[in-house]
Figure (cartoon, rainbow, N blue to C red):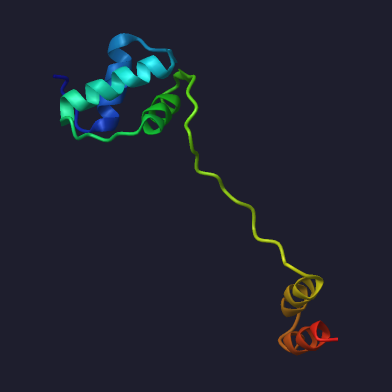
Length: 105
């Protein structure tokens, strides 16, 4: 077994030992197997984590996860009065009353 401290180190050592510059699904499965061998059959390291570690280390990774961390844009106001309220409340402390009464007109 390789002398490593954690999963990330094992992934990087695996890459170094095999000289992996291009990584695809087959290589990622091989890393998963090495992790299971080192940490036991119940190890649940995701393929996307392995791909990200290898990508950060400079490998050319050809892998698409079935999901991703998408950053959603800020929510948009649902109506014009909400926009007025947001814009007016930033300008003065009494604007809340004006925006509230304007939305009911």
